[in-house]
Image (cartoon, rainbow, N blue to C red; front, side, top):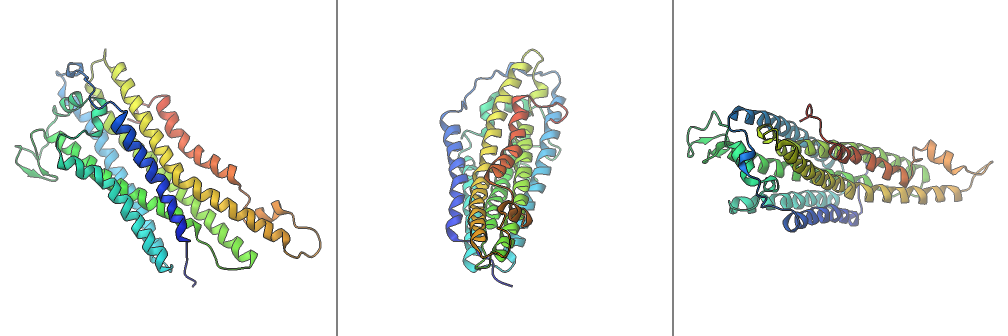
Length: 339
């Protein structure tokens, strides 16, 4: 079996999602309010057990997302274990490592500085921590007690929240790195002058790309579900009079996060789709120039017969069709049944 090979220049596509990640960090650090003075008196202090409502949702979303995030990593590992050019395999692994380290950077910074701004501060640090402090953990009888995730800390549920966010951030970085590299590997090319061989390879590329697109959409959509689960954690404890106002803040934050996730998906999908579309056009031109017996070649029929009918507009539409529901869900509101 011939070694599979991807032109190493195509791994530069990874810089597009890295740029989106960096822009998100800049916007979050400079334009998103992290010191909102949301008063803690909007919380219902007479029903502390409502904190468990948000915690159950958060833990369920965490469990499901982490389990799901293992899938792209496993699929990439299987892909890399097959016959492949050594340089393609090495650059693939290096790309995943770099993206994972980028995701790990804010986790290391936050753990080095306990006073550093955390993502939930955009929803009011005081009200968030006050709501979570109403809960208890069975494994924590004191601040110094060691449990599943280390020392319990002064507020065990807040400690649980911090450490779970850190774990999910690292796992998500690894999963997104695997998704990006898996998409780039769809650009595998066959060294052949035979039009039929190249067409068959392109058809496999498109099939793999569609699988990667659906998997990427699944991972990022449930990543969005995870994000909204922690955003909604304090909501059951908010008084009825203040709930509409605080819900509007949560919804706006969810919309920003959904936009970021959608752009992240499109950033590594569309370049690959457009490159493959260019290859189809070049191959169709080559097929049309090839000597034919009888009638002139119908390019559209030829593309259809080889599974290459879709064009760039179809790929763009498919990408936006998969990301649009994320944004629509948050601009129109989130069902209380779902969260």
